[in-house]
Structures are given as structure tokens and as C-alpha cells.
Image (tube, rainbow, N blue to C red; front, side, top):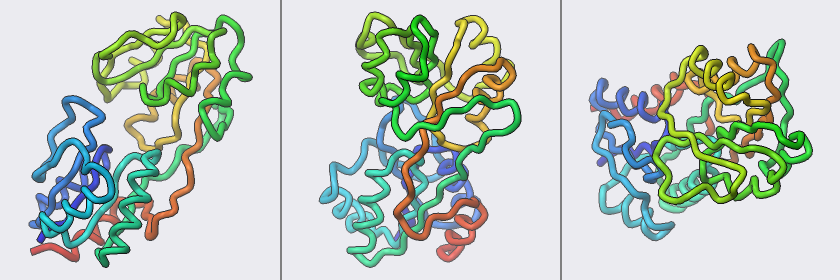
Length: 244
């Protein structure tokens, strides 16, 4: 019997390492959004489950005894499905979600509920750096008046969907200095980012503050899973219940 870590974040990778270091029988799953993800310290299954029925079958086949959900804060569909199915099957479940970023002195943040609301805050001809991932691109179809740059980890399999934009390939982590140099080179006016939280990916926000850039911050949807932990030490303590 095994603990399943729903992965896809740096926190999930560290929690998998914690399991390996503390003799906790665990495995992990990755949805496959990145073609060559960093290796985890526990056996890892790639490609998702194929919906709710596939997830039920996976849990039974691998004798999963508990589920730790450490997916991205914006992966709400996965989180809700996992929460509902573990409750249905009587399996222990916990959600780990790092705290959201908060603005500080010098930040020029505008909080938005959704990417589609960005257009009124972007002037004609502005250079807009989209750090929200390629899956969010359809929500920026109303930005024909701006120049768009979308950063993603993997090379694109098809051309940018509109003539006013292009992809930029880059694999994190990125230092503050590197982000500053990149934004200067591209003449970026506006940064659009999801409020994913975490220190490693905050460097673009620190660079934007230094350069005085406007930041359109897409706020994360509320977490409806319970319990929802915000400190990794609490997630580690929860995992220790299954140490050998």
C-alpha cells in the first residue's frame, strides 16, 4: 500500500524527496503538461488518469492508502476531482498549497479574477509578457492591440495563434538579474502572471518591481478541498503517519 502524491510543482518534488528520505512508501503522478519534467525521488506515473473512472481504477490497482495533492494552485479541476473521489472511497486526503504572493512597497499590481479582464489595463502597442502558460492563451484573444510574448518550457508544436505574438522558450529557475535583463531586452511594459506563490518563481515579480513594470496578477480560485495546508512542514508531518 502506497501514498500517492499528485505532483507538478516544486513543492511536490520536495515532498517526494521527503518520502524517499523517511522510508515512506510513495508514488507520484504527473499530468504530462511538460514533456521532460524533472525526475522525482519516488516511482512516477505520467500522463494523467483518464478521468474519474480512470482515477478510481488507479487508486485500487496500486492499493493507494492516502492521497497528498500538491498540484498547481490553478489546477482546480484536478483538486476537486481528487477530493471528491477520495471522500467517496474513504481514503485520507490532504491538499498542500503554498501561500499566495502579496504585493510589497514598489509593486504595481492590479488584481484580476480572470485573464480575459486584462485588456482594459493594456495600452495600444504595449509589449506584454505572458507568464501564464500556453493553456491560458485563448483567454488573451482580445489583446490584438498589444505585442504578446508567451514564455513556455517546451518548444511549441504549432505557431502562435495570432500575428501579434510569439513564444519564448525558457526552463526555470530564472534569477532576478536574468529576468531584469530579459524584460529590458524585450522592452516589456506589462507582466501578466498567475498568483502561484513560491519563492523560486517570484523572481519575475522582483524584476518587475525594480523596473517599475505594471503587473496584472491573476488571482487563484479559492481552495474548496479540506484540509488545505499552507506549510510544507505540516504536509511532511501528515506523511509521517505512513513511515515504515
